[in-house]
Image (cartoon, rainbow, N blue to C red; front, side, top):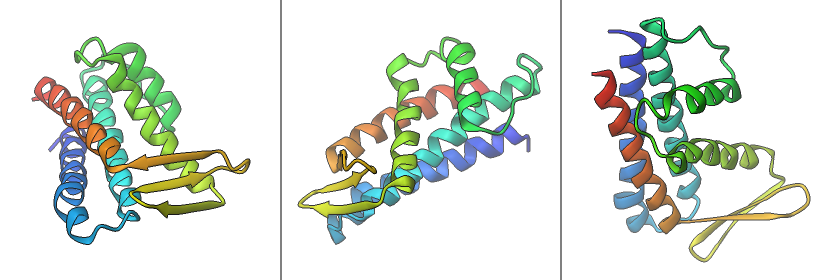
Length: 154
C-alpha cells in the first residue's frame, strides 16, 4: 500500500473517531472536556488527508519533496492543490484554523469548561471558545475535504 493511501486511511479513521465522539459519546457523557479530544481528532484527519494529497502528487512527481513542518506543507497545499481537488478556500482555511486552535491550546496557561463551551486562554487572557455546534460544522467541512481528496486519489 502506498504512503498516500495509508495517510488517507488514517484520516478517515480519525474523522470517524471525531464523528462518533461528537454524535454518540458527547450526548451521553455531556462533558465539555471531550471537545478538545474531538478537535485533536479533526486536526489529525485534516493533516493526514492534506499530507495524503501532497504525497499523491509527490508520488507522481508533480511536486517536489517537502519538509515535514506544517506551515510549508500547508502553503504548498493551498497554492498548488486546492483548485485541482476542487476545495473551496473556506475549507482549506479550516485546516489552518483547527491547527491554530490546537497550537493555542498547547501554549495556553489556562483552559476551562463553561456551560456548553470549552474556553482556551492565551498569555494575555484573550479567550477562544469552542462549542459543539462549531464542532459539528468543522466535521461537515472535514467530511467534504476528505471526500474530495479521496475521490481524486483513488
